Length: 333
Image (cartoon, rainbow, N blue to C red; front, side):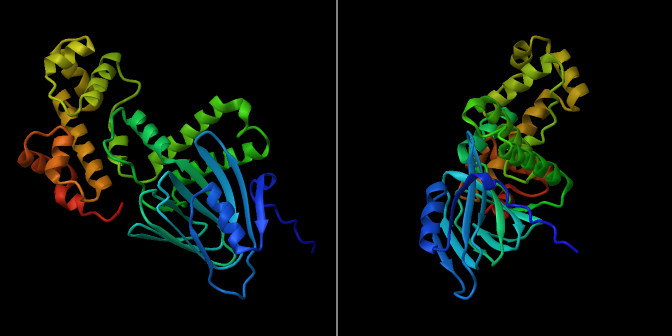
């Protein structure tokens, strides 16, 4: 039987280097990402590093292999998130206090502000998505409609077998194929490039658990009445301030009674309940994102709560755990 021709790695027309020299590989990869340690774990296997790369507005797509068994220690990435998707082989990733056994079914997401150490085993080839950190924060702020008050962080283990992850991967591969066909990552289509990058990040925020997930899942309906949208926008803009029902209804252009009826019909909540829910959601994001380095009293104040005791009671009722328990959570550490 005739052997099937082997498909080339992704983005093969965008090769940046191929080398058998560890120091050369380290130096070139560092130019694209950040300074790091790179060490071979065995002198017996074949080190054959190769990298392909296309750069967009705030996102770059990369193919990378080292051939042999290596350890990589970049420390903190600081400026960008890095999604690592094994195409073959396996790797062990530690980002902060979280460890991920990565393979073609389980990707990893490196948070920029957490120390990272990795071991890529022999034969590991990965598709890497590099995303500007500020871009992710800006997109999250825009789709939640509020200032997040803390840097966003993802759960490092990204399970690709989940149906939602499959949809995200289809978007990603669509961008890869478009780049290979010369339809994306070109200087003459920067606006459409940025829109597609935003769409990829919005989808990632919806699919992968992150510190702002509770804010992203709020019940506001984009197709709701204009009155509701004006009221919700005001709540998000002034989440940390005291807002009266009369002030809210005046801004929305209706009466307090009608505003209450609209909120109940569209969201199943009164305006006051919606405001409280948004404040509690923001508090949860702050507690998860700051990992206990911000006192609960400060979190309460930053999320618009004036009474610490009532905040703690309401928080536990909504989330089933105390604010201190959330602050001790190890999911995003």
